[in-house]
Image 1 (cartoon, helix red, strand yellow):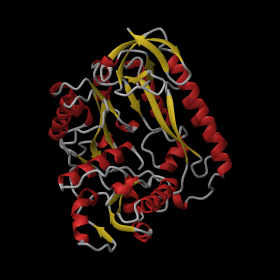
Image 2 (spheres, rainbow, N blue to C red):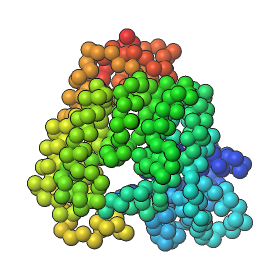
Image 3 (cartoon, rainbow, N blue to C red):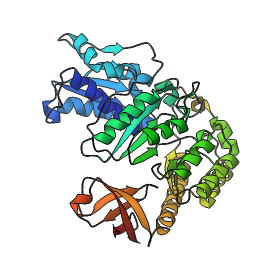
Image 4 (cartoon, helix red, strand yellow):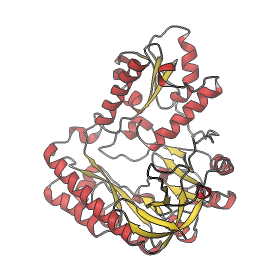
Length: 421
């Protein structure tokens, strides 16, 4: 459940189970064990996890139920009490799920397996991507920042990075298995290598120099971690995708201060403008939060206006969700649900308009598109450009899982329509 980072960790858990002799069940009703890798980034996420546990037990009444991940980390007492749960694992011990199952020894009491915190992040040699043309690779976990609204630091702990050499080796494996694009992922990837000799830009440079992977993409990265070195590398290498998702959260300095975000609205706006100038055609996205405690109408409009005049092309819009254990949880003057809903709708509408304008810039031009392995239900091939615009086209099967030059003919309203150039 939850983010892409969690999805890859779920694959890593499955890998560890397979190494221990387990096999994927042919259907959910045939399961001996059901593992739920949970999310708790918002209160709604935690509620969905509780529902998933109940559904898993209903569908598999004889199966052992394992609850692992962020909800187990932040709400272990709640997880223990959920009906049907046999094992609860925190974020570090969840990769030891096979050993935890052995410890049950034929009975099913509740267990919480805790381990000492590890200093580095392990990279597992996973290459089975179920027909995917791209793959996510977790290079970092944890976070050293102290945002007042965020429970992730509690769930994920301190910053830990994988070895650059291990990452490069895994990228080579993925490339050899047919993967055409690797997206480097983390809880806060800008902190990769922090405190040592490595940093994110040097890691990307090593991947470009030492592997044949056609594309490298970054997942979400905080604005204070987008360095000139990283921008220069993106501007100079056609294999480094022209796309960054840079969380904004708010365009008001007073709100950013209450959020404990380590940048100002001016700094953020200047960064976007520098990126647009240095990397023509770059696709820029952002997270933005509506209704943070005490957010005034004027503060909201500061956010809206910054986004409106910026080169951002898409937004992930969230309403503020209070999370117990965070500094913001005890803040006064919570914004009403009605106002949150109204502000979220305005931001989502702005995102639609910005994305439309971005797509329109490329009608009549050629774009390099990584074609996915599966056609859509409408028979079209589909894929994404390096700047993360969705493209659909008619074409032969032989161009699936290939990077193809596509002439963009029109904009359907949700995606670009083209033909092989």
